[in-house]
Amino acid sequence: MSDVQKNNETIWTPSNVITITRILLVPVFVAALLCPWPEWLGLPDFGDQWKRIVAAAIFVLISGTDWLDGFLARKYDQVTDFGKFMDPLADKILVTAALIALVELDALPTWVVLIILAREFIVSGVRMMAATKGVVIAASWLGKSKTVSQMIAIVLFTIKDSHADIPISQAMADPLWLFSWIVMIVAIVLTIASLIDYLYKARVVIGLVKSDSEKERLVKTISDAEDCAVEVVSKLEERGWTLATAESLTGGLIGSCITSVPGSSVVYKGAVVSYVNEVKHGLLGVGEDVLDSDGAVSEKCALQMAEGARKALNTDIAVSVTGIAGPGGEEPGKPVGTVWMGVSTEKCLKAHMFMFEGSRQEVRVQTVSAAFDAILETIQVES
Image 1 (cartoon, rainbow, N blue to C red):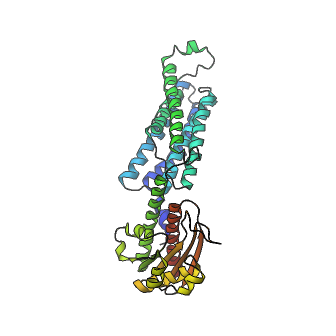
Image 2 (cartoon, rainbow, N blue to C red):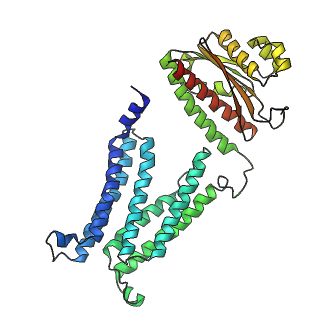
């Protein structure tokens, strides 16, 4: 069975079905609130107040499914990437549709909707920027409280009289009108506060300040590499292959990620950390002529390192990396970030060159990720 087929099978979990249903019910709520459906059904005595109550009930029902799909996903361990994407999107679609419908009914001023929607657009943009840099910005209680207060306010504004054509002093005599606005003001305050909190947490990502330390970003990136190592170990085990690594600039980081996976000893035999040329020549068989003419950071060196590691550790595949992580050490034609990688199997011997950017640690971690990609690609080609 292909990976695509497996992925399609996991999409239609009960929690994801509920999420899709929630989105499909949004037009039902809008129609219940805006359309003259009592007349269509021959219910001329069905007043506007009951119509609003029906619409509010539908909104509460849709909102309640948000808790249900999350509960089912966690209980049955069916959390999927599709669900992570669609669940917050469903909430945004529901809230946006409700706010626009309330503006259409003159029950809510436009400026309230603009504040709420502007916050969502800004946060979504920052979240995409963070994702491209491998950073996850944790949700806070402010964001969750904002969502709850908005939902409650929308329900209240759905069932209350708009009082759009009378003075505010008269409208304030209506307790429901007054309570609705109190809740909405709380929701607006929480909306702005959660935006400020989110921007503060993302200040490094969006360039508001420069980071004195890249530790958090590095840890997240290494975590991603370790996640990729899980797939590498799984694919090697499926293929029945064993792996060896020859590492120079990464200093054993590839092997560290591999061995973080439980059961990796079935496929991983070990590494030769050949940080200096003497080890490259003495243990991996890199020719002295290659080191003298081409240098340690070269295609020929990477190929001989990979071939030497595979033969020395008697494995089915070996990957080697040699490069310049910086901040110094650049050579003519080989700036900081230059990395050569070799991959050796019984059937093929190939090399790849990369030009990575970033700090010393970022270059090393990008090299690890590239090594895992090369292993997976080789397994797929030779399967």
